[in-house]
Length: 143
Length: 245
Image 1 (cartoon, chains in turn red, purple):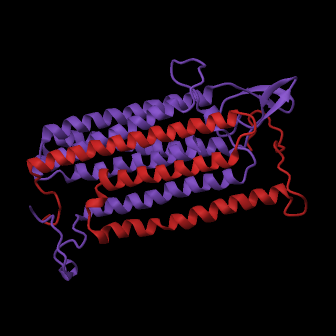
Image 2 (image 1 turned 30 degrees about the vertical axis):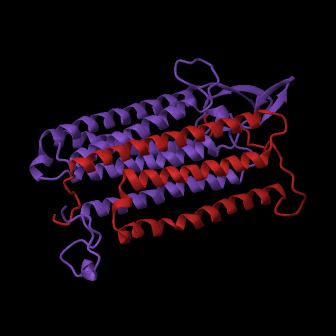
Image 3 (image 1 turned 120 degrees about the vertical axis):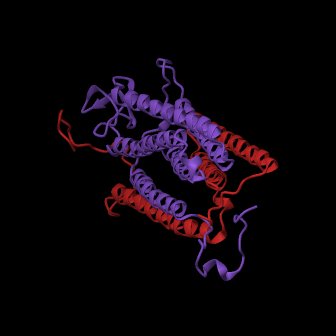
C-alpha cells in the first residue's frame, strides 16, 4: 500500500487542519442559516397580498447557488477531494456535468407538459385551472 | 513527508503505482458514490419534472411547520433546520475521526466515531418523528363537497389549493405524487443514513479491536467517512428540493 497518501502529519499541520475543519463547519452553518432566512422570507412574501413572483424566483435561485456552495465545501474539504490529484478529480467531476443537461431537459419537459395540459394540447387559450378534477376516491381504492 | 507528494512526470502511468495516488478501495468508493449521486439525482430530477408539470404544489412552509412538543405552534422550517444542523455536525465529527486516524490515534478515532454515530441516530429519530407526524396528522380537506380528515401519505395529499367552503377557507386534495416523492426520496436518504450508522458502528468495533492499529493505517475510517459525507451531501440537496423551494 505504498501509494496510499496517509502521511504522518506534523504538529503544526495538525493544528492547521483542525482549524480548517471547524472553519468549514462555520461556513456551512452560516450558509444554512442564510438559506433558512430566505426560506422564511419566501414564506412571508407568499402570505402577503399579491406576492411578487419575480422576487420569489430570484430568492429560489439564490438558495440554489448557496446549496452548490455548500456541496463544494463538503466535497472539497470534508471529503478531501480538493487534496487529490487533478486527473482523479476530473474523473469524478466530468461525468457529473451530465446533470447540467438532465436538469435543464427534464424541467423543461415538465413545464411543456403543464402547458399542454393547460391549453388542451394547444387547442385553446392558456387557462390554469386551479383545482384539477380528481377521480372520486373510495376507501381502500388505489389510484 | 512520504509518498503523498505528487509525481509530475509521465511515470505516473508507467505502472507499479496508482496513477491517481489513491488506493484501489478509496477510488472505488469514489466511483460508487458517483453512481449513487446519479441515482439520487434521477429521483430528484423526476420529482422536479412532475412538480413543474403541476399547476399547484404543496407549500413546504405549511407542510413542515411542526416541532416536537410544540403543539400546534406554527414554526415553518424549524425542525428540518435542526435536522440539517445535526447532520452537518456529525459530518464534522466524522472528518475529525478521519483526522485522528491519520495521526494513528486510536482513542481519538473512537471518540469522534462515537459522536458521529450518535449524530446519525439523532437524525434518524428526527426523521421518524417527522414521518409519523405527517402520516398521522389529520388535516381538514374538502373532498367532493365533504370535509374529511387526511394524513399525508403516498395515496393522500391534503395540501392542495384552498377554496371557500361555507365562508371558510379549506384545502382541497393536491397532486397525488407529493407523498410518493417525499417519502420515497427522504426514505431512500434515511436508508443511507441508517446504513452509514451501521458501517460506522462496525468501524467503531474494529477500531476497538485494534484492527487498524495492527494494520498500520486507518484507511477504512477514511472510506466510511467518504460514505458518511456523501449522505450529508445528499441531504443538502434534499433540503433544497423539498423544504426550501
